[in-house]
Figure 1: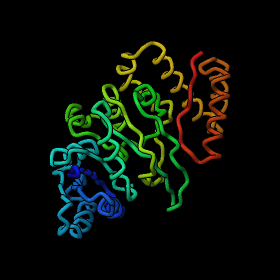
Figure 2 (figure 1 turned 180 degrees about the vertical axis):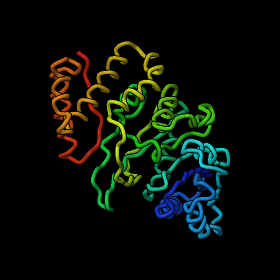
Figure 3 (figure 1 turned 135 degrees about the vertical axis):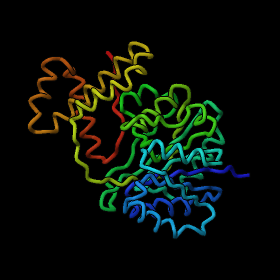
Figure 4 (figure 1 turned 90 degrees about the vertical axis):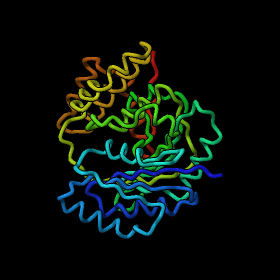
Length: 305
């Protein structure tokens, strides 16, 4: 018998794209699914009313369950609410502005069915779209023990919409940490990868839609905040793994400064001050050019000398 798959769709201020997300699950070639839409809009807001109108169109669809929060919480809380009302043996989460491609669930179910329990979750390749045009394809295909790569922010999985997780694994992790305002997906995946392997499914199963956004903080500031949250996990690792992570994070700051004309001198200064080595900086720049030319997102192979 086909295992039941639960897809939780948290929604907040995106009633316009929500039907696309829901329909992408209903149109899967794998049919034993339940969809739980968790409305995290303020009950008094126009966004709640607009979302209710959208969900009225799914009242007669047995596979779709609609749950409303009493007040705006956050995305992690919405995902946990969905889980608490779910029955699926496998769990998936889908952002309300993304969409599954038709064979995603089928392929991921086959993957977990054919792996032992040490493989706690799996992911597929994906495309990134802007103005309905594909602008990037995921080139990530690594699998196994990937904790170090995730802590390096060097694993291109798009965990918020791309994971299929075993129910028992999600229960053991106690779901998403609702205290995290940023990096919720990273934090969840880090905890998952501390005790589980991640499998790769060789199919493009997800479309991620890019939206304009204004960065209120520099990547350097965000990296400082990142380390405040994740340094405890990093310190648990072997010294050479810790060194790789800190090097990669510095290279990412170097990249952000290098691509900003006003901050370019600071990027040069990072090399002069040996915050990043000349060789690492050179290899990383070549890697970034490769990604741009091929339109493929993939992790950087940082070798320790």
